[in-house]
Image 1 (tube, rainbow, N blue to C red):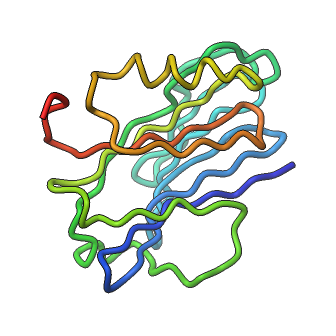
Image 2 (cartoon, rainbow, N blue to C red):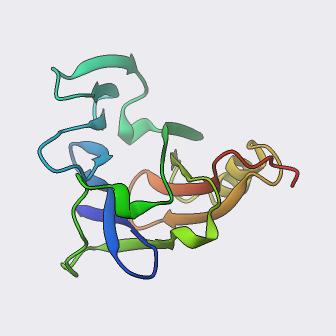
Length: 167
């Protein structure tokens, strides 16, 4: 079953589409919601991982296990965006379109920017979700959003950029 997820950020005045994630039988795809630019990463069903940055030709970065044999958990990427979303002119406003899932965050809760990490986890292994969080520095994670209706499972992990995990 295909799944389309978007990360939407608000500052209380506007809502901006920041990241998109698609899961299909062909793989896991994720990228920025930039107007006129195609920046994304793909984990194909056969295990080939490609990155397409700055509208270039997709570049194969690594070969991982095929998705139907995926075990454990793996971080697909880490990125961040500014908490002043009014300055993100090349990201579209959210127009209330229907999606399978929306992660809606309030950037006023983040002091210096928002860090985003996308993890994939072996389906039907709930213990891995806890292990994934424990593998990160204590106090780093601000919030997690997990999607268990797809294979592999996905977790979008958010944190405050520039803030010490211990504070």
